Image (spheres, rainbow, N blue to C red):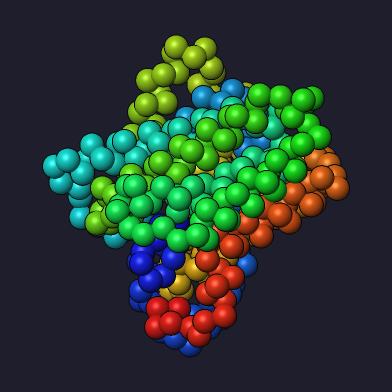
Amino acid sequence: MLRDRRAGPVVVSAEPTGVAGPARTWLVPALSALFVPVYASGFIAGKIATTHMAVPTVLLWRFLIALVVVLVVVVVMRPALPRGRAWGHLAVTALLLQVGQFAFCYSGLAAGVTAGVTSLVLGMAPLLVGLFTPLVLHTRLGAAPVIGLILGACGVYIVLSDRLGGSLGVTVVLPVLGALSMAAGTLYQKRYNDDTPVATSVAVQMGTSLLVTAAAMPFLGAAWLPTDAPGWWTAAWLGVVNSAGAFVLMFVLLRWRSTVHVSSLLNLVPATTALAAVPILGEQLTAHAVVGLVVALVGMYVGLGLARRSRRPATANV
């Protein structure tokens, strides 16, 4: 999430458009309720996928399936194509925001990091974006992102405190690197690709990510195809629902509601993932995890400026 001088953390501009007000009164709550589990499902499906196939195979099929879905959208919408250096900037964004983020995320899941911990660590990325925005985009930084990031880091530490010396060890560094890659990609996207149509941007990023992954496959010794049914259905889920579907829902909500609304929904993802992982993956929800999760959520809430803004009247673009 990015900050400007007045509004705090922002992702992209959020101007209401497309659907008339009465329709949005019921459609926005419905899409909001759908967005959180769709986004959180990526960590659950990712954990299952990495137990049935190698990480490069997961990446390959995620990018391939997502690209096919997005290309259908591009054919229908016919957005403008990138020009000149925009192609290169989109490629760099793809390496950071897509390949880097998910390679580290899935590697951590494959190495034993739980889905709940992974989602919690990656949930810190928006606060990192807010913290580094002044250096990249030359905007002012308030105290909220710094305080929020400190609280969030404390929450993550509490969650991990009883496992850092045991089952997790240094593998927790992998989702941390994923969060850093996600933050860097978000900042690069905002700095260089902000004027590129969404469908075009996502299509180029998925295409670039697919090419890079496919080129690396012969050197990684991974199978090109999933070898069983769980591998196929989790790859399909990650490509269609979690990748293309989550992007569509996010950008629709950003257009119809404020960025604060989307930030609030993203704050619910770690808790949703942790709760869903108990019955689906058999992960434990310990006292450490509950306390740490609450502290981290408070940090995200403060860091994204939601506590301050919840006391303000609705603005014109909400």
